Image (tube, rainbow, N blue to C red; front, side, top):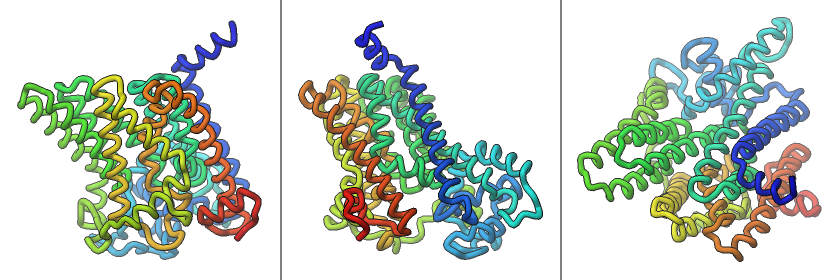
Length: 453
């Protein structure tokens, strides 16, 4: 077998691509377990920050068979407060603005880890109560990382349909390792961002399948179910529903049957409502509201200054400045929309651009608090857009870019991926060794060997 034949097999063998993605997910899970046990073994809990509010549902569902979170909050202490850190809700229950859907996805891993803890548990030990131990925490986290692997595979399959196999595989890997998705895979997998990637990629993949058979109702029903689940996993990702809505509209407007147009639209809406139902019921039980928006006071008027900060800040935000590979992905989406080889491909490119605009507008209208609060590693709110970034990168690495631009992209995009890996390492060293959550400028200075400022 010649080197050329090996290279051609590597480029075209999609089963090999799938195995490599599985291997990467398993490798990142191992990195997480080793890293956590090395840096956190002596701490009181492996579940910290906002993860405590997500994780609280797991022992409540499994051990108590309810969603009365008061005893879970007493152990986990979200916001540093016991019992009612987020206020008192209906039936005197503790409110929780964080969704239950990620915990439902983590249940298999949690149950496996809980079984390990149950075997090793010693009531005389001063450690965490059963249900909150190292095994349960790591089990849920490792399962979350493996779910990211599923999201990556769905992303690859989508990009394969729209571009080609080699570009799809490479783009998926580099979108994973070159964006904030990596941080929420190996550093904070017990946040909603990892499950959100899976949910969004599943929605996009099912929507693409629906566009290939636009007159059938059932595919649009499945697309709607996945869309509702996207909102259940992460409420802020409701803006990404513009992608299937736009594709449904563009696809069905070409239909000659008004009854089919109406039937597919109703199926999608019904599916979305059902997909969101588990989260809506949970919040209605805890808050008395199907969607706890938090009031209009939480919204703000978008400004150009805010937009520049969101995209290019050298502080704690800056989606593009922290991870410049994103800019390459956005350029690629433009190429896909303009140069796609089929009308359906070009429509998907335009819908993806609309999705990016939607998530930007959501960030503008509902900003983070000041300082480093909630702004870990730059563009955390955009992890859900990873499949769209990967799709754009695939277009840059594929035939849509043209020979010269394609050759340049195969140099530039891997370089930007390596940059992100180095930046993440420097960021984590600053957090672990120096106890600070650095700005982008501080992280870059540290990466360049200029010390801690």
